[in-house]
Structure formats: C-alpha cells, structure tokens
Image (cartoon, rainbow, N blue to C red; front, top):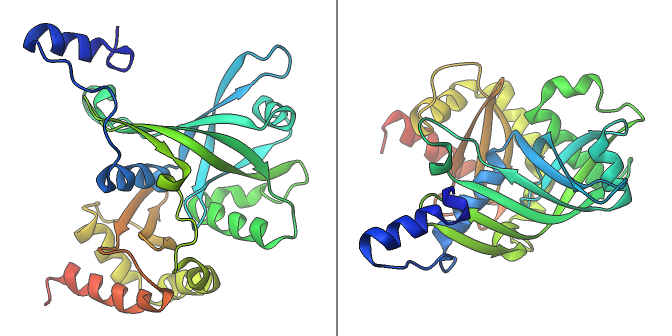
Length: 268
C-alpha cells in the first residue's frame, strides 16, 4: 500500500497512536503551490474516457498555461485521447514532476474538468497558440496543421498532494485567477512585453534565472507573464519567478521587473 492509498497514514497511526486529518483546510500557501505546479508544467498525464467502452485511458500531453491559469494542450486528431475528448470532454490531468529520492514525496496536482476545443481565428485561439509556442517552440512545425487543435482544460476541482500528510481538496476558485484586476491589462500588453525583454534585456533575464530561480546559466528567454509571476525557458528547462506581492495592475509590471533585476544584482 502506498502513501496515496493510505499506507503512510496507517503507519503513522500505528507508531504514534495519532490519526491525522486526511485532507487539510486549503490555505494561500496550498493555493500558490497548486497554481505554480500548473504554470511550471511542460507535460502532464491526461486521463480520458475511451469512447469504445468507457474505460479510463491515460496519455502524456504537452502543456502550457493561459494567463488566468487554465492549462492548454495541443492535440492531434489522430490521437486516441483527442478522439475521446471529442466524444466526452470530461477528463483529468496530473501535473508535478518527481525529483530526487522518493517520487511520492514531491508535490503533484490532479485536476478534474472538461476540455474545450478552441476555435481557430479567435482571440482565445491566438492567445493560447502564442503562449504554447513560447513554451514549446518546436511545435511551430505542426501547430497550424488542419488536424491539430488547441484545447483548454476548464478546471472544476483538484486534489493537491504537497507531500506526506499534506493533502488538499480545491475548487476552480483556488486554481484560476478569475476576474483578477491585472488580467485585462496584461492580456493587452503581454506579447509586446515578452518581445521587448527577449530583444533587449537578455542580461536581466539571465539574472532572473540564475540569481532568483537558482538555475544554471543557459540561453534563457522570457515566455510569459501573469499577475502572480513570470515564466522563463531554456530549451526543455523552465523557471518561474513569483511576484511578491502579486501585481494589482498591468501598469506595475515594468517597475516590478526593474526591482527584481536590482535584487538579482544585490542592489538596494
């Protein structure tokens, strides 16, 4: 029996005589961890219902994230999971990469929701395409083929396992930045701001990655902004820098980037 099925809880009860709560009250720390797991994920395990017999079917999919935190996938009509989503949009998505040691000791998030195929030639499709290709630039080779589609996961609920005895049940309101005051402004300026940073401020991006995120040197580029932070990539590597506190408006972005660069340099 593994930890997820209750083995860890039973062992603790046998040794200490204590029976811990299996699900903790969701707090801001848990919410921040869950949203970070979504935004950092390059890949995830997608669970669908096979239209042939209704049985569960799981496959790996490449991921990006919309401005408000909803996951986005690029899928092929030839894929079994795409056929399943066309028949029944209900699905689940597991994100969170294992690291050194016991893989069950690392945080992961299981999301349940419905898949929405984004229509071409719409602002939603354009935004999802831009953000996905910033995270997965090699997908430019096939992203616009007629048999490929961008799919958003509209999240309904989720289960966060933050490690031993750290389980949380979450709703959509815990995962998505719905109606955040900075969303509209960032949506209008994000593409230009990302291009500006990549064209003229690679030195600052390197500082963010190496000094603030603790990554080794590389060809780091900016990929996206959101009210709670910014995302960088160097090939298959990603790094996320949180805004502390989160932005209240898009107008704060420039001053926050300058302040972070100064902090990375050890100034002020």
